[in-house]
Image (cartoon, rainbow, N blue to C red; front, side, top):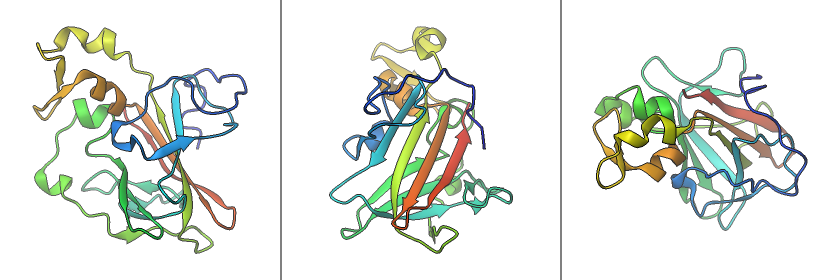
Length: 200
């Protein structure tokens, strides 16, 4: 879609995706580095979802985009919610909650209890009918939080969100990304972009 084309300078070819950019706290211990990442950006955190298995089913709240039919988009009621379910174990991992994750959700908007409680109950299939995928997540971190917010911290080093919650500043930086893309790859080799959101 080109949402992030030109936003950040592309890095030189590298062996893996460990470029020092911190990723979301809610994915700690659930991802692995991507080898030989193509066009990794200097402000991009990119990883592959990996538990005991590397294949997952996906459930979501949202609607499929009218033009880009592989992409999960917001409804009139709420932003997308995407959950991965590990094949074999059934373990669930929240990949993205548009009502909680990203700069806008944390600093610009508040959400009702009903919006926050929406259910991801639709299973994702690609255009070939595949429903088991490898999952690759990229977050984009172009906001200078130290410059914008460091003077607003409380004595505990916490920053107040739009909903009134006080959160550790490091957690804010990691979960307040300004863009996210999620790609999946089926066992048949088809790659699909399922989430592409600008969040600031």
